[in-house]
Image (cartoon, rainbow, N blue to C red; front, side):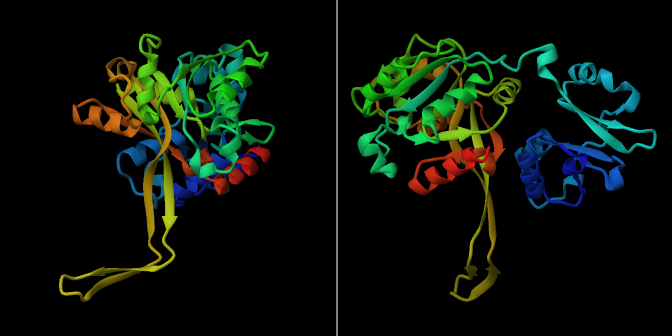
Length: 348
């Protein structure tokens, strides 16, 4: 990757920076006019800005890190040690005039595997998938192919990349097809077990079938979404913030293609805004959850997971948000979204 690809102006907006971070996939950018580094911007800086209610049209220079760590060219060999010591994933390499000439990224293989996350993953795979009809008339949603393998295998692969090996699937609709598919797999580096819903229990009620089986925090995900993110970082965020539940949310930026009117009480026009934009965080269907949720669920009661989450929030439990960019979230809930997911995966 060219250094030019990671250099930005401090005047670009948060939204533009998020697009750049997602495009380059390196989680770091540099404010460096004429390559002379002034500040560093990471995805963590952007996340903190969003979580504190910061504006998406704010210039990134307002949240960048001006007390960054860099190394001179003759100390590049010490970059990995420096990154471990300072808990960072990249460090700019600068010449004697402060111009960035290289970037060292953390070499996980030299010190530790990134497969350090080994907690259970629960996949909700019992739904009818009515929005994907007629595909789901023949196949359960979890087995709908995206490229050369079904969506659920894409999901499992992403968790496996971070060390997860214990997968539990809540199944109902066409469950025998799902069981048969995994029964025919020869892979031995992960396990899949199944909990059978006898009646539909919603996106949360089926968790009651796992009582006594999960003893740690666990990931919960729908079977029709892919999240391109650092799952280790989600877990660390969840733990550091002492969350009871962490919701992975995607930042959506929507432009309304019309003029929008607001009115006074007497019916007179107050103001008109042409093509206003809306920015909001939306639930992706992926969570990190405290095991007590399973222990305390009423058995055989249909309930959605957002309802469960809201009930704990009202009781004072901490429910946090881990934001990801819109491009990091792929959802195949509808046919056009399925095609978009397929195209995106083919281009990776």
